[in-house]
Image (cartoon, rainbow, N blue to C red; front, side, top):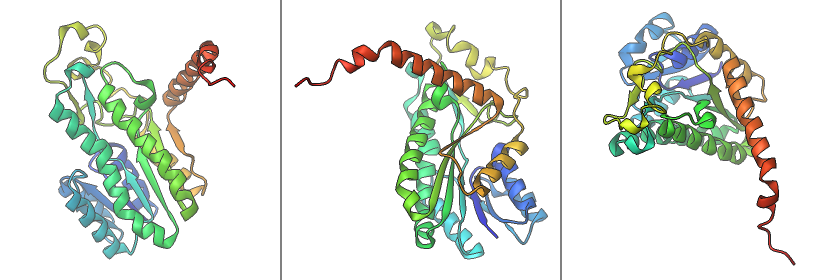
Length: 276
């Protein structure tokens, strides 16, 4: 049976995915900064679930979590880099320490976890890495510049890793969920501490205190979990997996607009080549 290592399992998509994996009878290391928040999963599946403390910004904890998973279950077949959080604020408003912490969690953490599982996956010439991104990486909405940047960075890394690891039998997929009924817009959302009035019209409506999305999102985390499992089980998981009709519509619109702009500026773009 496969073994999954899932980061950020206390709530939301991570928890839904952990529940779905365990309900199939598979093995899973379910992690959270406070392992007590996932102990109920172990209580319900004592033979196949392992609760681990994991702050992905702590290199020692990352290595310990992978080591403990391998010691308990033998190997990690599927890594899900789900741990992360949102940050709202104009780029000018971003606090340096807050932004560094955001990148440490949303980018450097997934990289550290991937690097910790890859030696075992390379030896076996098999494995799957799922990096949970966001449609924000493509939409780049006002007030989400830093968050979008972390997810765009994660997708860039995912694309290169996919090419590097495919010959070794390892698949890498970036997952772009739309809006799902999780704590992302609630407990997991942070923001700039010193708002600038000039951004009231563009960023203001998206500040946490003004956001009205929480609790109304159309996406079902349980269905998202099943979709991810289906993609992994297909043996041909895509480079990019969109989740939700809102994600399909939004990303499709972005791609159409990019294609139109490319054509509008084609002549000027092509004019920069050296001529013989």
